[in-house]
Image (cartoon, rainbow, N blue to C red; front, side):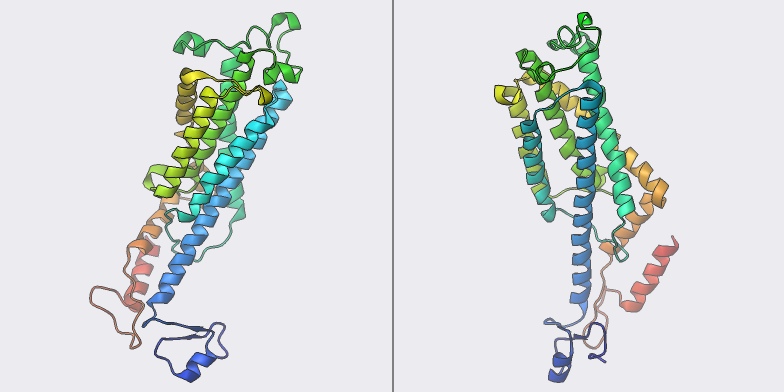
Amino acid sequence: ALKVADVGIAVADATDAARSAADMVLLTPGLHVIIDAIVGSRKIFQRMKNYATYAAVTTIRIVTTFSLLACIWQFSFPPFAVLLIVYLNDGTILTISKDRATPSPTPDAWRLREIFVQGFVIGFWLTLSSVVMFAVLTYTYWAVDTLGLKPLVFQDSVFDPSRGGVNISTYADTAGFCDSECRQLNSIFYLQVSITGQLVIFSTRAPTFFFLSLPSYWLMGAFVIAQLCATFIAVYADWEFTAMAPIGWQYAGFVWIWSLIWYIPTDLVKIAAHWIMNGNPWHSVHQRQFVGGLNINGGQSNMGSRKGAPNSRAYARASARASRR
């Protein structure tokens, strides 16, 4: 039977003949190690899925945002700032391998449609946050009149009525070699894209609201360090070679508040997309909590059950009750 099986498993106290015929030999007594392996593999798959969803979101967001700004307003974002965003994002997302993950109650599979739809929905939402901020800072004086921020030069130079209205035609106009205040917009957008691009990690890793699924200390620490670096670069960096100028702490605070306000509805957008595709997302959350909290008995060699731990029949009955809910 072990020889013809797809995967033959021999227990720790099996005979030498069974060990030689099996594909896998358990080194510890009982079968509970198989359950541990299944749970561990599903946690790994969940981390891979979280990474894939985050990668789809950030790719769609960055490409769509700067494509719209370049095509509609001819806004040219410095390539060096994009490299900074990518380096900090990659350094943070690597810690997802140490992140907390809840195993799926059923065998996992790559649902690419779900990943791409969530990537498009969340990515376009973040794109909207950047486009609206661009319009607020360049078409209006709202930030100056309401928040008392220092006015940028765009209303007077880039959008000069003498040029025939809105007219951004050269890299010097948008990248800011014309004036130090022109370069501030690049630093503002660098900080906003960096903040929202990493905040979305906490949304893509959670099935519902981000605060219901606590991240690991590794992920939180990497996020804090990366955003401290991004904030200090935007506040103090005066790099003429890449058209970035310091924005000061007032504009940095404005960007942080703007990013947090737009991040709060992100989970609602994600949940709405999940509900349309797969139904109520809280049903799968309940099943994950059920599997994670159940003390499964893998059984000893005599298949007996320990006190306080359900055996295979009890687990099957409990699983059936959970599925009926």
